[in-house]
Image (cartoon, rainbow over all chains, first blue to last red; front, side):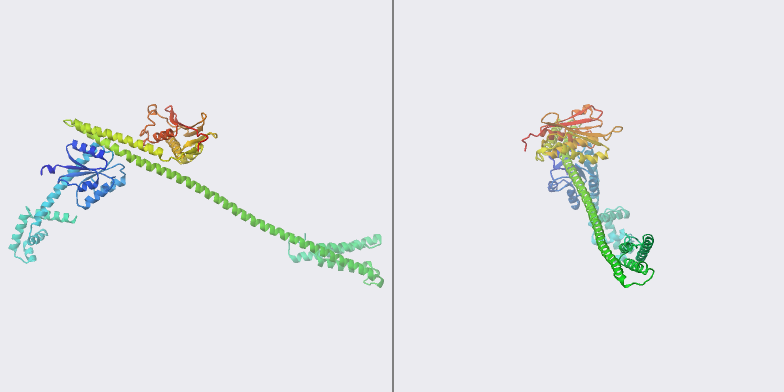
Length: 208
Length: 399
């Protein structure tokens, strides 16, 4: 488990010599790297669960770099992408960046530029993964609430007093207090403010 | 011509009658004057008055003169004088006189009317001819205008065609350049990646020589591949159009000058062509040879873009320096080629321009050599350069 969480760099380029060169270059700074000759090979491969980034050639036979970017996006796969192109015109780079590309480099790419971009992309992915993990944790905790507890939680977060909640749900104030204690315990909320913050994060994420 | 005189018709008629009367009175007066001197009356004055009146005034005034002269003769010249009385023996004489007068009037009027008719007919004809002439002139003018328009249309068509050919050529060159750029860029990217990797392996705290060596070897492979791409492109360009035939280089030079004229104008460069009219044809591909001349011309124009203070002239010459040989030279008044660059000028990718790809001269030399000729440069490094190429003249028997 420890080994798989080491950062991973994927390289997709249809030119074998470029692939080998980038493979060697990235390995030389101690990063794990895996290369693919086409976008499809990459999609078919099993990928370890680790912070990663993708170095992607724009111009490739079959699925192009932009096509793969779209495919990954619609599949909900979050991977920072560093594009490489032989003729990087401005409209093309603007389009790639708008679609969420991490970096856009022109071939031939200087090793130093590429490694810097890789480090930044992996750092960004690490942060994003930590964020997603935290969110998943919160979501799991909230999902462990019973339907009744969930109702009570929603009203508590909406700012209602116990007495008002009891009236709203047609139960005694004592029962509300019991449910509320369970909610705080199951969601591991330190305070009412903490609970509200967590509920808000889930709501924002659900809207995305 | 009375008929031709301007003025209202009635006034003219009145004048004619007055004239007839006047002439008759004059005749009477002359007759009386002459009778007092010579004794015998001179009747013929009346005849002249009648003839003149009829001739100038027509039938009506003629009749006036006839009546007047007849009455005047009766009164003044037939005994008894100064009386209207006519004795019986004088009747034949008087009638003869009157009939002569009437006859004169009738004859002259007839003659006059015939002549008028002829004149009118002639005038009509003249008018009609004039009208037709005007019509013909208009038709001719319209035709000339149409021809002028057609000539202008043809010129515009020719200009459009030339422009189209130029654009097509530039597009082709542009596409070729893009394709070359990509083909060559890939192996170069590989070379850079592997060379960077090699350096990275060597600069680790514990250098990994095996990895560095592998990366260096891959870099060499990449460079080899790049050079293979160049060779392939070069042979592709040389073989692209194997349509060979007799080529009149003077025509190709003129055409090329026309193609490059736009660029020359933008750079305020003047073309100067000195073409040997007796230049023998060469055997080859006119498109490729044009490509060479165009390349040399465009290079020359661009070489002069930084020149100020002296004329920018691109001189293209054709001559036959030896039997069976043709030489073309393209001379510019630019800044020349630096001595250290002279040897590398024809190497692929050697360029002194910020945006050049350095293929033009390399390809040009390949084309000239494929045609059995030589391409070289002469430059003193300051006042411009001359690019010359020679080609063997086509043999007489060449197809």
